[in-house]
Length: 540
Image 1 (cartoon, rainbow, N blue to C red):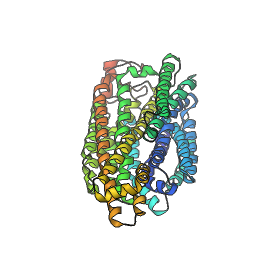
Image 2 (cartoon, rainbow, N blue to C red):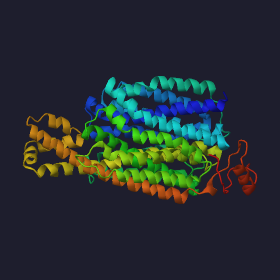
Image 3 (cartoon, helix red, strand yellow):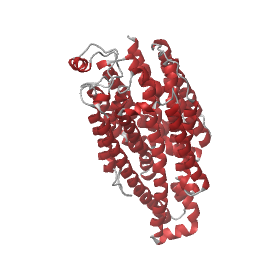
Image 4 (cartoon, rainbow, N blue to C red):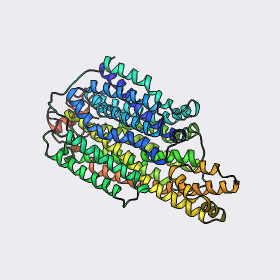
């Protein structure tokens, strides 16, 4: 088999492991909360600790791949991710789990930053479109089987095994990478941008930390205000440092191409909308409707399976349909799907989510592979590591800030709505009179069902659980409305910004097609990859 296909196998194996881990963790969160006595904030950090370190290290990891060779760096990322997965499975506290998840994010960052770049250096022309299509299918497949695998493992042998399952997958991926993937390194003398790395990491951490802790500590507290100000100052330092340096970790001149701005916006809004909502969808299915992890995973199948089916089709279409239209369509479908899920009531069945799952699943399947293709097609090939790192950074920043930002709204509204619902009934007022402070803490920590179980009177238990369901679904509907707006902004931005003339022709095209020849005739020799030319069918 040709080495380029082994490259695709190695990249897809590692990516499958990464995405499988993300989706199985979502389904296992309620069990993790109960096992480790974690609060709702701890659950946010199970996801955000991973996303934060992933976002913080992505840009630097892309540069390291350009400097030292993407094969070796990718293998290091696989090793770090696999080892930290073991630590996650062995965790005995929420803090240990979240620190281990942060280490996972470091390994994931190295893999994400180099994965698409490895595909880009191995494939070109229509073969790159095929490779991206396979990559998209793997992404969809991991998302599709993740909830089922996570639910089955969590219900059967415990949540810790959702991390242990990464061990054999990681070992296989490392062996394939070192034995079969071609080693290649760009002839560059790039250096690690420590100022940029530290300032960007600090800014992102302080922002997410402030969002997660804002409700608990008070938005006007000196601590939260200081964190927000520190985040803004650190981001200003990052932007100034990147603008003034000769070799920044993020070349801001890349964003002079509107298509690069568009793909970054698309990556951010996709993650900050439907992907950030997966946490709250999981909590709704398990905490409100009472489904087991496996039963909840089954109910995610409509969205995950449709994403799996649509992804390879969209990957193939990238060589025939302008990417702006595919991205606009995909994100619009995500927005429409989220809007269909804004009508959940306390007595609703899970099927109220089904129309939104179907529409949003198709939208995710269209958007993911097109984003991957555009990312490596709108910049010169020698900057593919930085480009893929940048796009993945925006994706992870979207997840981290999306979960934290939505969590601000969620905790504020669920507490007030639950308490006001209780106060409207005589039984509810009795509950508030005898345990108001403990109840407030239970709502914030996600322990309402445990608090209800300790109440001896059945009518009181029913009143408390019913009020919580009203509070949860009311807040959930507002979060879905916010997600709808975010995805709509992404759709409009991609339609306006992802211009065909920003695409860079491939340097080493495969056997030219009619469309390829028409591009060459319109733009002249393909030996000048940085020229901005119209492209009827851009590579990738």
